[in-house]
Amino acid sequence: MVETSSGGRFTVDDEVVAIAARTLEKDHWSIAVAGRTHEVAIVGREPLRVWVDGVEVRSVIADERALAAAGTGAGAAGSRHELRAPMPGLLKAIHVAEGDMVERGDAIATLEAMKMENELRAPERARVVKLAAAAGTKVEGGALLAVLVAAD
Image (tube, rainbow, N blue to C red):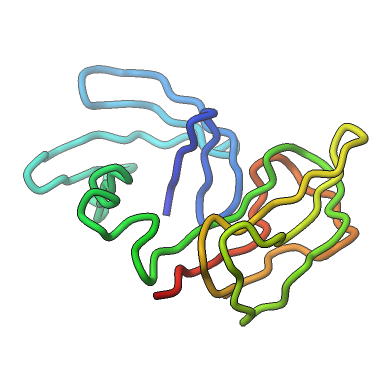
């Protein structure tokens, strides 16, 4: 799964990666992902068909605004939230365990960055399904810290 953030960061399967793209022609690009270059082209739009290095791959584009409007995005029961480090720093504490139920605003983790402690909080009532980093770990900006699944 590839995701983009508003800050221009890309994550591939929960790992922040460097991506550079160069347009070769309309709907055809050369894309470097984590140092490896691939040719990517759109070969069909309805349904979306994408060619990567000569092989057609299954592709789905999810617009988070459309999902939220349909009740299947953020705020919907069972929706997934990834808590990521907003900047590089030291993960001072993890305040929850996998399987815990948390309420909106509950502290999930404390990140020390630039001599300040930042509490990262639950966006809504949810269950902690994965902790991806441990207290005392140095993390990069965008690193996955926890995965939460919205509760009813």
